[in-house]
Image (cartoon, rainbow, N blue to C red; front, side, top):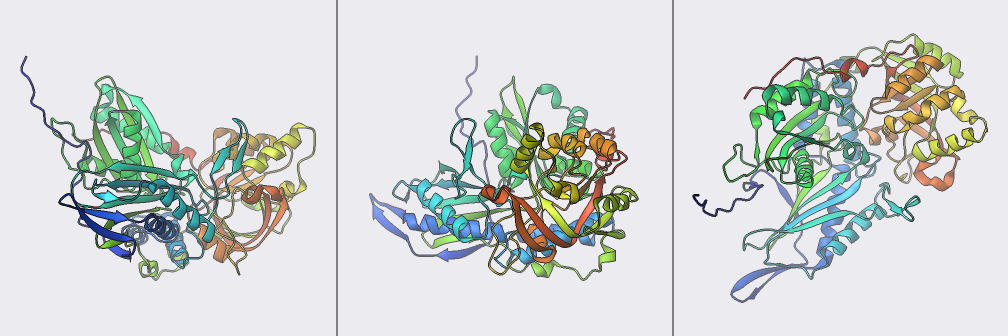
Length: 552
């Protein structure tokens, strides 16, 4: 048999990045030395610490100009729905508030993730993970961020680390002799991380009609819990499941945009830019839109094809949400550099009136008795935009579990869940002089299993959170006369500054941000998603209805 000659080809052959603009962070702690006829770059550990701290600070408060341009395009698009435009405007306003450096853009300030690649001519002392972790620690201690990392004390018991460590830090060797150290820093919240999926398929999926049907179903199931509009990544193939998912995550951050756009017999990854446009068009026909109906379920799509084992065809799907938090960085002999993020997002705000953005808004007085609030909501069709003013009770996962234990033991439903709507949320730190830290909604679906029991006991009859709910919630609302209101996922800083007037702990103060809170809100925006008649907005968009095939 003929022998194929050896040829090496990087699986992810990225072209040189010529588009990213950088700012100088510091030139201290970086120097060069000559040895063995070569130039080496030395980087002090404290320089890595400073870089990590500055990177986390930037991505919690600033966005890329390209992302903001896409939000502005939604507002300007005459084909966008009123709800699309309303959500986009709220996200733009949120970006302006967050850029002030006090309130982070999202209350879920995420897991810190660092990808680093250095050539062999970079010398650091070998404690890079520790130095980078120290910078992440410093950022979360000093900024108004939230600690979300849970340490398993036993298999069943957990405790918040109180530092947001550990971070995920992956460091690799890079080819070449030019001394440089390149990074991608990310902060990945639970909402978007939970919308990362792996499907183990077969060669049969590599057919235009089969793939279109597959993505029509799977992409709808992403729902809105991760705060669209999304930057969507679809990856087909991979030498392993973990390679597929890693590429999907990096693609959603647009880190792999400089891949080639065609394959080769050597087995390199490539972007299919034509298929990207076809998948984007598919998502715009779902009707889900930017959370509450319309066309802007996604800003853009990346479709990447990888080599695969002949018996395996993994498919990965990942998103970057409205808190599109990532930044590139590099260390060279010239200094330490961070990608230049947008520091003046206000320049993307258009001069528009509220009536240009959405349909009529209905104001709801939350100081009224619960029966009167429900009567008003019962007269409204799903997708109606409402504005809430008055008291809300805030409770999420752990508080729900504790209340369930009380009900199971024969104790009554707490009166506060009978008298007030419940908001699923958990705040970030409260800055000095503010009533609240960033305080956006959490994913509603995590509380679905509690709804039937709670509503039967007279509580949770009006719920407020983000994302779609299960059929059991729709059925419970139909049976018990309940409602689910969808809050806009993403603008946590704007809600804290403009809508939340007072915050106090009601119960379980030892749980920190997971405590039960009572808050006072003013003009808090939401949409009727599930009503007391069994109507569910998302039911209209969850089932595939299109008979399509992608072009080859």
